[in-house]
Image (tube, rainbow, N blue to C red):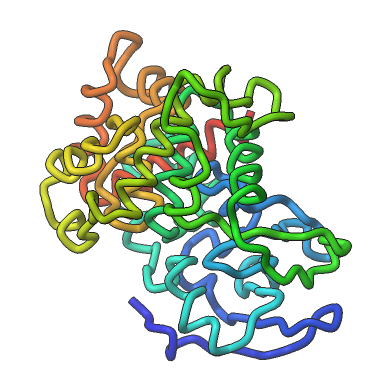
Length: 329
């Protein structure tokens, strides 16, 4: 597991901004590094495709209070982070991009049959992100029964309404303001905790306004969970969540309003807490039923199957076959 000092970095300039090239990241994955597959995988909601000549997989986004763009170079052997300096790599990007993990052994462990070989051939350039815990949890509360594009719009609206303004130096921004994901206390104080009220959040997003498809039940859940995080009445112990049995870790998160098995597993996986969980949504259920278990398999059966078949890397397996199922059609 290479630490930040093991990487060769080159500081350069791109469009007048500091840019950082991280060399030989392709050695950490049989599929190299693919920014498009990583950021357009459905695991995160603040990144958008921003291709430019010579870098078709470039994506621009916000993470950790930073505005940046990431793309692959040399066929995925290197990656470039725009608006970043060498000190940012050790402080943030190494962890966020999961560059402490060599995916070679992971790929070998989950390459269990022809379907997984096809999925890995297609998607193994994607890396699991290690996102902020509170942002991941609160974003996935918004995701219940919503499409990925709508969730992205809602998370963007939440950030614009309650988040802090960030410098937006990327050429893509054209002077438009960019906002960080809001702190839990800002969400808790701004959203209505009462399903009978309409705070107006989500207005302008199809089906998104509070009191209708979005806020009818999610807005209070989001406000209540944010309040529990901000007041300390829910204080997650990340190390403990990583080492508890998976079912007990889920139970801790399910104490929050609006959190069930899927949102708990998404939070544990996409916040980098543990990789032995398999979030089950419609796509995942469809794949597992059609490839392995048959049409009558229930969600709990699917979760148990993934745990047994892929062991500690069930989350990586799910991540890659989810990408393959969605993007290879």
